[in-house]
Length: 330
Image (cartoon, rainbow, N blue to C red; front, side, top):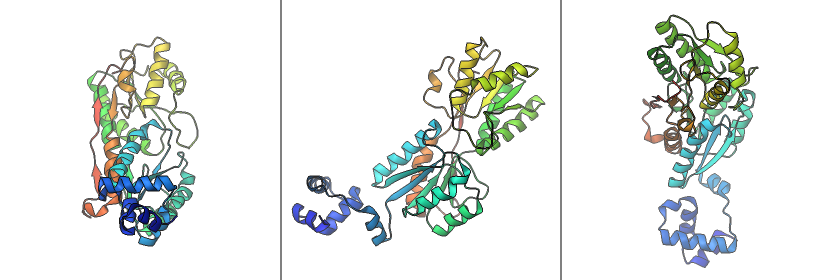
């Protein structure tokens, strides 16, 4: 079955059928419905890879996330999907599983699909990977952080600015023995450094770092991290009275473990998470956290990846605001 066969069956030109497949939003609704109906009837599946190679233009946006199971990226993924749906683009998604050693191979596989642009939830560190992406000469949008040396465009937020807000909040409510619960890897390093600097400035002491798990690989979020924190809480003197958790998932793990061991929240232990995930407002006690504009990041990054000409060359970094959401846990 060829395009001409679809055209003959619908009474439209081959060009109109091609447009309906490549840019459905540019075709009249009744025309599109008739063409799609015939395609369904005869089981016609267009070869989009072949059409993109022929026209040197792709309708695919490649999204590479650290983990597809991480709740932190779900809203951003939805933002990418919604923009693609509105514009007739397609989203293909890959993950690195927080494994820095796999970034090169994953990104090479993405480039082999000839995408219109690539969105990353991380900034590649290997020189050969960065060089490969630059040579591809397609739009690259880094998100979720503000890299010092961007590959191309950036749509993110200040992890450091958000961490400073948390430190100021703990100081305002009278807490004086802070802790940071997370790994010192990736974007968590910036949060730790800024939180530590602000705590030293306001409280006169550095926060205590309590690691999640062991090893040098970034850990995916898990709901079983509470015991790590409680063991440190019981061991450290003077007692920690507030903790900034690297994600809402680990904050929930801390809160549930603390409650089971009869710790009063927030009197004995104030807790702040990161991300404002859907469950955070419904916990008991409800979770104080940092709200991140991840859905807006997803939509905006996709817009730029698909249409980089919309961004002036002197303004390739879009920094969106974060917000501290105060609830019952602190």
